[in-house]
Image 1 (cartoon, helix red, strand yellow):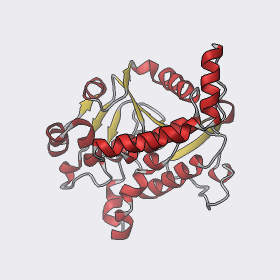
Image 2 (cartoon, helix red, strand yellow; image 1 turned 180 degrees about the vertical axis):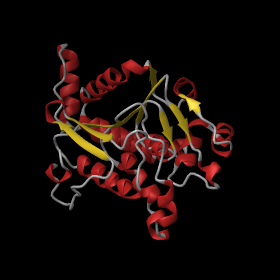
Image 3 (cartoon, rainbow, N blue to C red; image 1 turned 120 degrees about the vertical axis):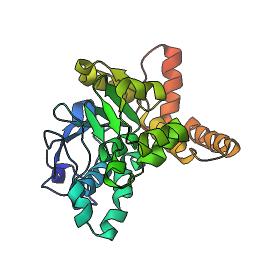
Image 4 (cartoon, helix red, strand yellow; image 1 turned 30 degrees about the vertical axis):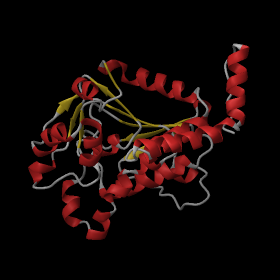
Amino acid sequence: MKLNELGHPALALPVDLDGFSVHIDAKRERADIVLARPPFNVISMRGREQLRITFEALDADARVRVIVLRAEGEHFSSGGDIRGFLEASPEHVSKLAWNVAAPTRCSKPVIAAGRGYCFGVGFEISLACDFRLATETTLYALPEQKLGQIPGSGGSARLQKMVGITRTKDIVMRSRRIGGRQAFDWGVATECVPDAELESATDALVDELRSFSPLAQRTAKKLLNDTEDSPLSIAIELEGHCYSRLRSSEDFREGVEAFHGKRRANFTGK
């Protein structure tokens, strides 16, 4: 499916996608963004901008409940177009972190499912997603030190929130690779599954997320993102406000009635 077929009324969407494709399964309320520049799925400067626009369009698409970021072949992504950094303007480079943060800003659940290499911006955009599914072949790394650089799209900052300063220094300052199992043990990956089970694990997580109230999911994601750096007292107060608003929703009433009726809830997002 071409991006200009997504039905988003507010954006002039690109047609010639640079290194990825978009697939929408309206019946399953799922959209897949598939990195597709084999063999290593390098993400270009232009591709980063297009990925941001794609996430924004899918966020506005009523047919989509869950977004999956995945890749063709045996590697998720070896990272960015290195020569592109030398050719890009300072203004363009300054937007890199904003583009990569698109999955975080998206109100819908976003899953990154990757095997093989997940380096550089491939790792950074995965860290910006809500769920990371890894396999026993997955290797995460921020190798910018080998180029005389540092991660520039939020990778070290997000990683430090997850694993602390000691482990982040180990990964960033030594350009160290960590496998999928270790990433799971450290709390970086949501799950680590056998390589052959990545697709089925992704399908199962999509269906699980679709079973919940979309309103409650959007609220939970925004609350957790907004309170990540808040003092505990502020986070608890904001949680209470969100809880209070959801109490008046149709989805909450449906959830309570379904619970007492011992039936599956039919959430509508209202």
